[in-house]
Image (cartoon, rainbow, N blue to C red):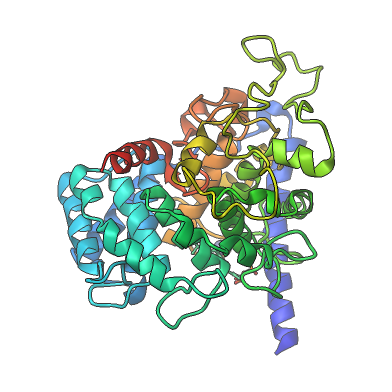
Length: 452
Ligand SMILES: CC(C)=CCC/C(C)=C/CC/C(C)=C/COP(=O)(O)OP(=O)(O)O
Ligand SMILES: [Zn+2]
């Protein structure tokens, strides 16, 4: 059995490598006039595939019985990244359907009448924010959701995925992300969750799902994003984490999820997201490395003519010591969980802060993997030889957005054409890397939930 598995894995690896070598030949070995590689994103095809899929499901979104809010999120977030939206009827159907998934005692289940679960709660909340209308945002019962989150809190500080379910880093992230974006995060929810996540960072530098398990990109994203949202990210070994994540980009140009495994398009987001978050943590990284906080990570080499900003500064750190920077080191002690004043705004402060570190991965190479190996005629896949699906379409597009925007200094400024693989019309909407929500939709929700 082991042998059969090993052989299958090798076959997969050869298939991807052959594909990549063919691309390499096409791109680098042929004279420029003979290069005919099409790096264009098949935007219209993707939108048609996604919209049709959503319509075909009907008003009950009947497929993947316990995962229906996920399906809504994967499809609707993908459409938003591609710069499109749903028609009014479909939007209303989605809001009505998720309303039926909302439990009477708070939280969302995988379908109407199913027990509430943190993962489907995260998917439902992110979907409703992406839909974004008044009707959609006000359909979330935040008071009951808060009570549900408290019910999921475990004595270890971590969270359970559902009543009687497993405690893991996914549960910590989904609980904290939802509470933060809905402006209901408080000290009770935060208490000791940082201890739990810290206990999951492994000797490799990445974060595992549970203490003692193997570091993995999915859980590393969850652990890191949650630590930023609760303002305790300085408790992680950041140089160790950087060391781990930079080695996860393979020769095929895509990311793998863990050591010695194959690359897969969905890690473009899970690992690319980790890299994007770390790009905003330079003050803490400096501190942990014993470097002065004036130390700058320049984006480009001095020989690069375009290396300066409009004010002539080579990607200088315009905010070396902002007063209440969410990425500032904590003053004393290990945990500031009981000083969580304004902790709800950490996601906002984070995205408004400058990006003062160069990308930690080769963003052009990742875009190549995505456009040439993951992209199908319509939809995206893990790797050549695999079939497209909505999960991969969502996370590959999220990773593509992250790589396209990884060289910009501020979340709201557009990237330069040279940072986009293929035509500039490939550009996707930017996203908030802590929540994986399209940025404009996040800003609208932030304003809405600050008021209500
Ligand atoms: C917000 C949320 C719910 C996040 C989930 C994060 C996530 C993707 C976790 C990954 C789980 C995992 C161990 C996959 C390994 O699968 P595998 O062994 O098939 O894949 P691999 O060979 O690539 O490791
Ligand atoms: Zn995958």
